[in-house]
Image (cartoon, rainbow, N blue to C red; front, side, top):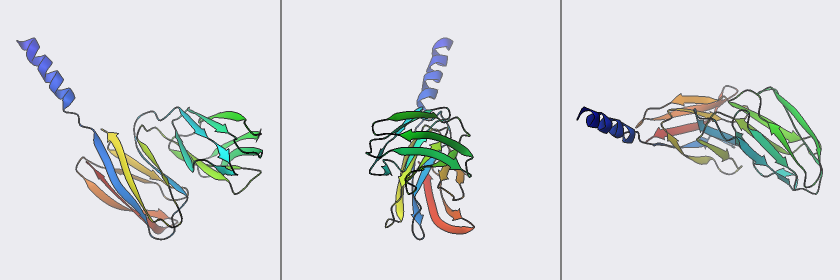
Length: 202
């Protein structure tokens, strides 16, 4: 009887763990930035990501990769491109050299975790994208546009309770929530409020 009772306790404890969902919104005061990434701390992050180029534009404003993961760069453009990073904010530097049409190359995210790194093309200086290198299994890329000020957030976060919002050049927002809790925080850029982040964990 004792063995049976212990077994039942063990089974019931497994089913008591409930997955949580992070919901909310990011509202800018004026014109939005370029891109943002919101994620839950915890996990290993994706080990593969892909970023393509066409019509002198990266196909994504940001990609998410876990530490030591591989990013595959593709060139589907008729032009040559030269992808590089020299970001003083994250300290990341690399240069893949010239890429012709149809060529691919890989870069390992072997730099500091929880960084957001700008990449560009030396041939076409208006091109840009970002690499978010994070230890997270739950994340959302927020692709901003000039005319939209409010962006919904929804993430299945399991048992995670710590969350981060990163926007290039903005102050990172880090917060911890208990289940059933909600919060509202200012998002700052150079000492000025640029947005409001509202989140709830349910």
